[in-house]
Image (cartoon, rainbow, N blue to C red; front, side):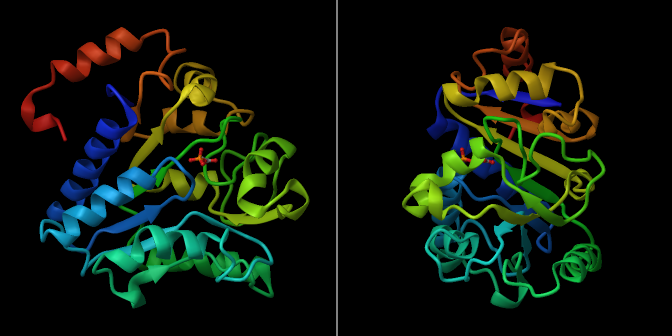
Length: 260
Ligand code: PGA
């Protein structure tokens, strides 16, 4: 694991954008997995700037998104469809036909999830998967107790997660109970993982994910088994890491070619 602690969320997001840009420059037909939530918003703003200034070309890129609410239409303002279009896809030169997003309105969810897995494989697998993390350690919507080998499937949200989402839906009572999410096994097959976390309310989940035991109770802890997982954090999210000064020293003393 590579743990990079930046002075604030702004510089962390700029660094994350340089990492994403590097992946696309090295492989113009890269397959990227995108996450939603508040955390990656600044990263997406940086990617938009790079693209609009002519420094990043998405024309060969294929994308997959991590998850979607079941039963929510694509134009619902809280849907992940709306989020991705509003915060990234409308503003970059990514061809529409290469955008793959989970369909929360699929009729036969079991066979739809199988198709989504097949589409990822057919595209050659995900080169870089971007992730946030929930306060309970979830990645995607793989809530605590998710199988560490799980595939794309329907999941039931925990009360904690529904509370965190209440503002997006104008009240807890409107938050769906069910989602479709890539599984932990699906995420682990990505060639590289970039997890972003900012703020004090993520500190405990980050410490348990990076330095605790690998356990289904902290789904992000499975990333300890991934050969190329990069965590980019602000000081608040890193504040419960026992080896924080070591991680800072490691990054500060890397050769330039290893930095993003
Ligand atoms: P957030 O969500 O970026 O809005 O904090 C992250 C997550 O729940 O995965």
